[in-house]
Image (cartoon, rainbow, N blue to C red; front, top):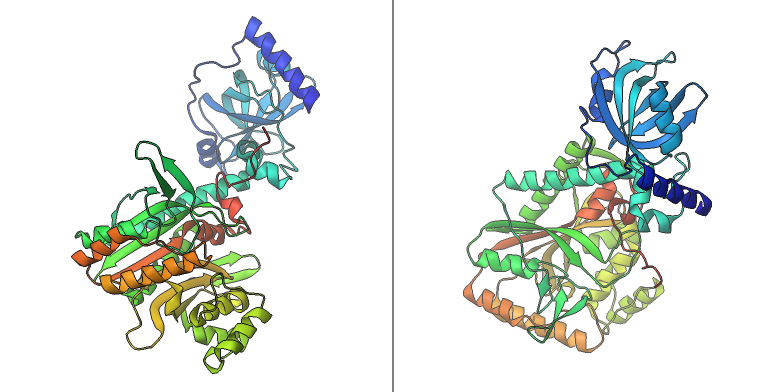
Length: 483
C-alpha cells in the first residue's frame, strides 16, 4: 500500500507538471448514474443520444485492445466499455482505480447483456493518491470503518444505504409531527445548568462570562419553558451529549427527538409514540413489520403495555411488592446491579428491571408506572401510591423512548431537585443540580403537559437491521489519533 501510494504521488507530480490537470474545475455531466440505470432497466436494446456521466472508478479490467471499468455513483454503478484509442490512452497513462472520472458516450448492452456506457471520452476529474480498499472485502477493521468513514463509504454501498435510511427516518419524524401541528424549535446546546436526564455532562468554559457551562444532556427543561410561555406543541431533533460509556447502543454524542404537548398526559404520549414509529417503519421499510437480527418486530399500534412491576414478575419471576428492603437489596446484588448513592427502594426496583428484564423485551412494549424515585421531573401517578406517570418503550432489549405526564408543581419540583442534589453530594454523578430558573418557570404556570423523548440513533438501528449504533452514525466517536 505504501509503495502504491508513493507511485500515485509520483503520477500526481507528473500530471501537475505536464497535464492534464488532475483537479479540473468542473465537468458537465448530463445525467447521474442512478438515473441512467433506472431509465434503461429492463430495456434489451437501450437507445440514447450521447450522455456524460461521472463517478469513482472502482475496478479496471484491461484486456489489451479493450478495457472495462466500473463507475460508481451515489447509489448505483455502470460498466464502462473502453475501446476508443484516446480513451484507452487516458485510462492507461493517467488513471488509477479509485480516481474520480467523467465519461461520455452511448448507453449499450454488451454481448453478456450488461448495461454499459461505450465510453469515447474519458476525463480525469480527481486523482486519488490513496489506494482504495478491495471492493470484495471492503474495510474489515472496525476501527478503520468507524474512524475513517470516507474510506469506508467509498467501498460500502450498504453503509451509504444505512445513512440514507437515517435521513428518511428523520424526515418522516418531522413530517409526522408537522402534520399534527407541532412546531420545530431550537434550544441551547450550551447551558449554565444541565438537566432533563440522569447523565454526567461534558464541561466547558465560557471565557467572556468567566463561568463553567455544560453541553446539554437534554433539551427538556428549555422545551418546557416554551410550553409555559404559550407554545402548545413543540419538538426538537436535538444533538445531546452525555459523558458515558461507548457501546453498541451508546455514543456520547447522539440525536434525540423531544416532543411536548400541552393538555396531554403520558397516555397521549404512548399513542403518539407507537403511531409515529409505525409510520416511520412503513415509510422507511415499506411495512410495519421489520426484520431485525433474526427477529420479526411488529410496530403496528397499539403496543403491549406492562407496568414495571408486571414486567419484572412476568420475565424474572420476582414480585417486588412481596420483598422487604433488605430482600430487594440482596436480589439486586445477586443480579450484579448496584446503586450509586445508597439504597432507595424505587431505584432498586428500577435497577432490577434493567438487569433482569430489559433484554427479554423483544416485541415493542411500553413499560409504564415507574417508581417515583427514578426521576424528579414526572407527575405522581393519579391512583397508585409511590409511582409516577412515566413509560419507557423497548424493542429487542433496546430502550427507544422515555415519556412523562410532566410535573408542574413548583414546590414539589424544588423538593425533588434538592433530593437530586443530595444524591449528587453522595456520589451519584448522574443526579441533577438545582435549576432555580426552571422552578421559577413553573411558578409562572405551565399547562398540563405530556413529554416524550425518542432515541433517533437507536430507532435507525432497528430500521436498518444494524447491530451497533456506530453503523448508523456518519461519524461515531472513536479514540483519537496519537499526536
